[in-house]
Image (cartoon, rainbow, N blue to C red; front, side, top):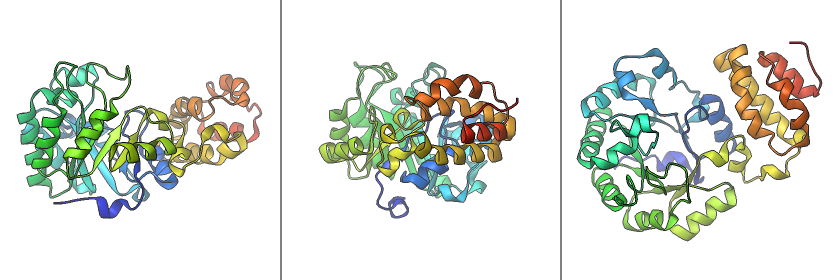
Length: 314
């Protein structure tokens, strides 16, 4: 069975893929802090099949991010396989099939969590990806479509039988979205039943909590999504709440510089706003800096302002 375990090393905590957040600059920072491996934002295989430049651009990365997995979504096995073949020359370390996205525009069409309702389609997709890419294949799932259709045991057993190297399990149904609490008991059931690595996901916000979940539920590792936004220190076992502005600043400036290199000066300044809201959450400095930061349209000026804490011309 193909695996990425040997490449991952000792870390068991992973930055979960998130649209609009887990791009190359942030993945790089989280890998440097200790995230076990990198997973791209999810990309439509329909768009890959059509060679959409914007879709392919979401797979841009730097070597320091490796091991790197391309995450994709789709519902047509033929389109998924052909779409992936359009980007294999980019040399990912693995492919992940998203079977967990709850967004209506994705899941209602049969992709993402919609595949939980059509397990035979998902099986065919996994078979095609395994046969045609010669890469390790993984999948991310939810517990089921809704509370009346909890088929996580059947889905995980099917995926394991088809040779995936790992499964990441978000402990909610598609109907729940991100409401309520993640059901870690169900995640633990999957970990106990499967012989492949199972990664749990849902409501984990610290390094300590992640390792407690590993111990309590027998999962191989833990994905952290929303709890890791603006908090890469989590992967190094540090508590952001105990870091003052000066201690957070070097990482923030590195992120700004990386964003400028990746997106360009103006786009980077605008895109950094949502990150800074989280990076500086709870600090008194943020209250007075927020308005200035949200009006700066140059990464260079943003970097200068963050470094000095003083207004700069716009």
